[in-house]
Length: 313
Picture 1 (cartoon, rainbow, N blue to C red):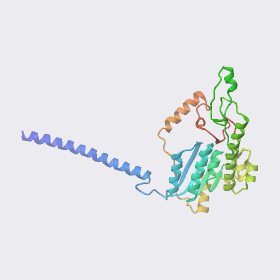
Picture 2: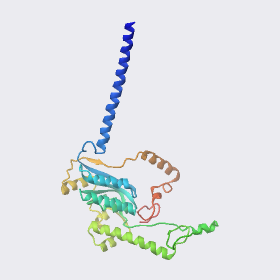
Picture 3: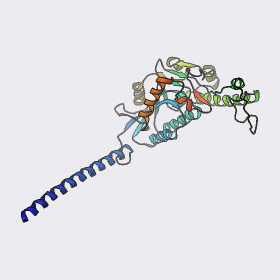
Picture 4: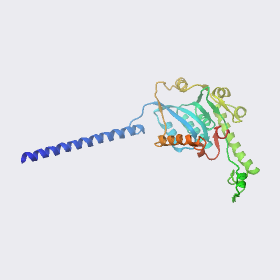
């Protein structure tokens, strides 16, 4: 009888030890995960000195989280320089202006260089102006210094289907342009004055950052033309033809940032990106690019070049 109890106790003890081992392993794994996450956030161990690569892709909109990340890069002592890797047709004026300003804030603390991909136009070029040096490829499409506001006049269609909208507003210039009413000359003039003001601001940014007189900027880019990387170098909008290696070489030669430092990507984590990309690809297969596009999210005045929709600047 005594031997049976001893055996049962021994079995129970072994089970208890196995359970304790499992919990200890889970605790160690949790601790290791906490350390890993802390390192990623820079809160436990100081990260390695590096050059930060920041992709600026797709439609540029006013994104406080992205601007916050840029400000974090500026404050991070382990980041010795920044490479803005731009591949974008532009976006909203305020979005491009916000990225420009954030890159300028970084530039006050450490060197910042732009490397353009296949497309870096309008608001994307505005963002590039916030950096110390701009590289483009021969085939890069850039420029498109200008702004645009788009609307439509559907009053003729409304007449055909027998619908007459009734519009009550506090003033003649309120809520214009409005597709439900024809654009009157005073409203057109007022909207054009806004466009002209922001266009002038864009050209002033080019003048200030590229060391050109405003009259030169107007002569070379005032009509909103796009140009190749080679033409942009000739026009003074881009410093040189080059790539990421050219940028690293310039940082080493001119700003004493060693080419041996690792190049690390900084980007916002998007847990739904895989789903959004898949859904967008599937929808595009059925409906085409123009129906489901980031551009449908754009409101207000745009600094954007996208010929498949508007052909504007």
